[in-house]
Image (tube, rainbow, N blue to C red; front, side):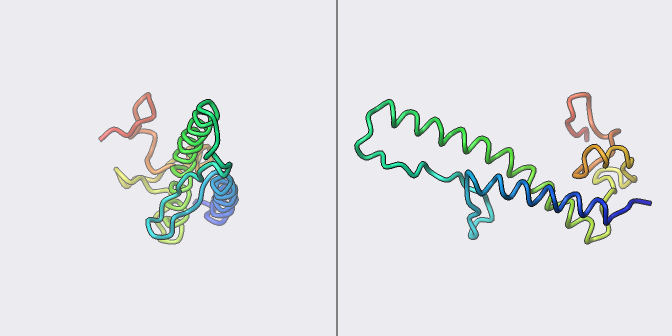
Length: 124
């Protein structure tokens, strides 16, 4: 039997960490419930073309990083909801129990390893 409190505590710590990271590069848009990259706060009105290009590149890097972090954020939130709903540790495809070793390695796992290919993608 899974120790749900252990997983919940672990996921809550991960959520706090991810949320703090997200806040350093973006903000949560309450209307859309999506994280958005924070634009560069430096004044670019008198910047030269190289400075503008650097600012655009940095903004795009923040957007890319934010997208990855947001995926982790949503996976953690989903896992915490599953704990609350009593469905944590159950494969979303087969309905089988997810091996505890898999949950130890990836507490946000949504499927058994049988439902993953060698690339880590879901097989349907």
